[in-house]
Image (cartoon, rainbow, N blue to C red; front, side, top):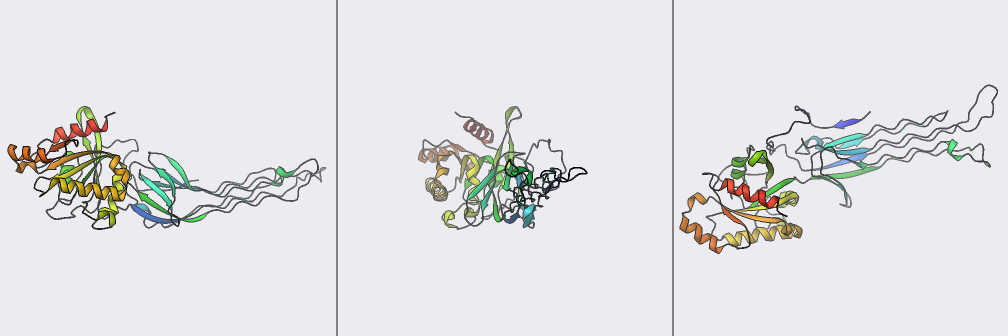
Length: 353
């Protein structure tokens, strides 16, 4: 028997979404600490065969059963660790003892925890990475159960025809584990608060992030599937706004910067009314570098937002001041200006050699 912890599903598992549900701020949990106790292995049997006419039969003690594992399984239908927030203790059952006539004890029931793709498990004491789930249906043992002990039948020999001992089962493992979610997406939107990230996501996908005219409207990451030409699509992630000092914990950026690590491409978004676009871009790069220098190795694109406010002359003037090596496009989510060319640019970057 297998025990599975998961959110209730209302769709067939083979159903393919044409859009991603928006992660509600009060339901998005990307960090939980749980106690995992795997099952103890069953003891091997110390038994000798007895039958009428055969009072001194040989050893026939069976092996003990393995204790239950605690296993993580990837589920592409999940987007949060909310279902584990109040399930702090996971206890697998022990294996049963071996029996006579070489009967092996039953294995303890495994506990299978379904988690979103992009979940990392770490040792709570050392911070060491234990495993990572990246594919739907992928199963990895988080906390292994104890091995069952060998019965006395294993220890018979020509010089020891009646072994008087069998192995006890190995104990299970009792540990605290941190599960940390890093959202998987093809392109991540990086920018200061009110740069237009959520508005763009709402225009190009079916996601419905909160949009308002004040800083830090987005309190949690949002995902959306962007429909492209010929029924193709890619996943876009809206990350809460980053401010200077985010890598040291200012604002919300420090908490959610880790989600940027799983994005194939980073789309920097800066409003055209910024007093210094280059300076804002450098601040964003610096925060990413301080958090994780490897982020600078990802492909980068730049979108100048709210460009419906610009005429051709102003747009040309701004373009001349921007880095020439950085692919740049002027967009407006309000008027849909260059939205399709932006999709083309992202798609080409995703599939470039």
